Image 1 (spheres, rainbow, N blue to C red):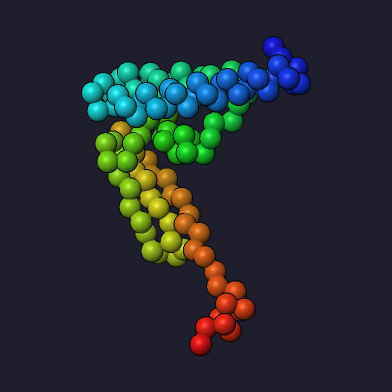
Image 2 (tube, rainbow, N blue to C red):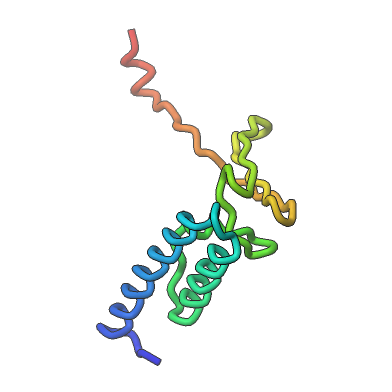
Length: 118
């Protein structure tokens, strides 16, 4: 298709704009029409693969890794915070039951900040 350069970056930029719009449409329509929202996400995934554009992290986390369905917290998935081991967020898909863990980075305090406190 395109060999890098200006045309390649322009097509990727357009693809990202369309992916953003498709996910926005999916979020807006998931309550009324679940199949249409899933269709929007499928088109966005295919567009990402066709243009070899990596999908932004916020959108990748809205797709189940197992069944490839669109999941939105409060609508068709469950989100929990676990304190075991290291703190992490567990997202459970409402369709297939697969759970995905995302680590939560806890801010560390430097030695200088400890010394400054009275």
